[in-house]
Length: 294
Length: 284
Image 1 (cartoon, helix red, strand yellow):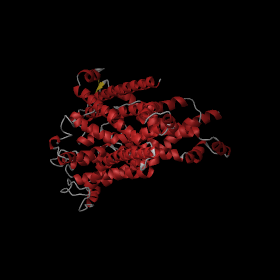
Image 2: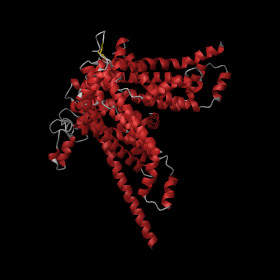
Image 3: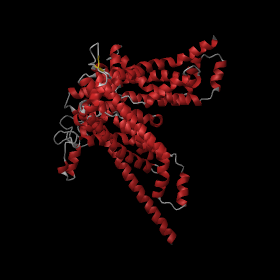
Image 4: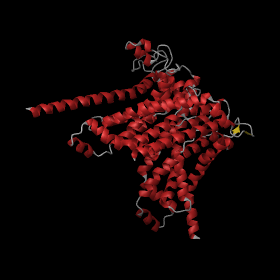
């Protein structure tokens, strides 16, 4: 009897967490799957069961959906290459006896702690489309390149790249921080020993730094992909609204299906499709990382 | 003679390298700061001078902040943001530390499975879950209410916080708890009087990490709130932009009001934030 009471007492500790988690995580998680089989405007009491029609439409008809996935992929590739190379380079530059190291570290991590909305809106003010008010265009004119002047965010040719670059501006400090933490775990003696054996800086970088940093690089890569594919608030800030046209990304499409066209079932089906794509991508990256370590 | 020459050579080489590294780091640092300085500076200009290139606003239009706070309505939203951040963080600390303590120290059937479910939730992305959450909150009559938002946000922070705290409790020496038990302390008493005070360093990470998260949260606030009076800053900014399309100084003042508290907290608590980020990355 004492033991039963004691066990029940133990459950009290996890009960609040379990209740909140069941209601606000597990239930919606399951409900997304259920709703994806329905055609429902979010209001009518009786959603219509339409089997897999939502998924069929996503897979075979919804051009703007796949365009949004392409857009997110494009931003992700730029972030993966440009943002992470920059982050690694900066971390490598800071991983030595260097003055002001802490100062740089503090500054680089300011953009990542700001919200995507704030960053997007602040940058929208810099690269706006108002005549003669765009800071980038003004600098281009000032350094004698007036023919490069462009409406960066509204021109379909440059809009996505502009978004990607702002995304990198916001994100590189985060990669920098993790890379730096990783670099600092590499024992200095390894470098010294290599030096004694006649290795130059490039050899050290290639033969010591890169192999030892591989797990960290893979980790940052996976997190960059997951984070960037799902980024959307930055774009809301940058283009000034939820309906982003040619810079739309999957989460914004889901939001548009839900709030714009009131198709709740369809929005859920899009969410599942997208979640599935993300799981596959991270699984591939994970497998790849295991192979490269073995 | 030769020896001296090579010393000079290496010294020059090292200094040149350092100069280049600093130039590179400084230029990146300037790129980081300039947009933010531009934002703050624009918030202190008038509508006529807002596109002047000078970073130093003259004359200083401090009244923009008063206008943004009162007429722009940001005062209300600022207080909302503070209220949501404080109550969510408080909720997370209590709920997740109880659960983490139980997962680390107490025995009950299903312990590992429940813990595993919490951890799995961190790994599985469900981008569409906000649709179902919206439906659920509607049914519970919690949509467009502060309570609904607070509960949702407590849930968002649970998994990571439980993980951080459990890792700490696992390593905590058992002797102190044993002593408290012999003195007749109940389990809840041990959690409150022994475990929590010891966990202060981790709790600081949990608090700061979650506070940043709540302050910057966007999507749930967007779908949950219709009324401007309940909105936190992040969503109110967007609404404001819709209403006062071209009032840039006021919008920039609003952005500064939103960004400044976070930057201040960051500068004061960097240590904990950096720990939280690195830990969060390793979990994910």
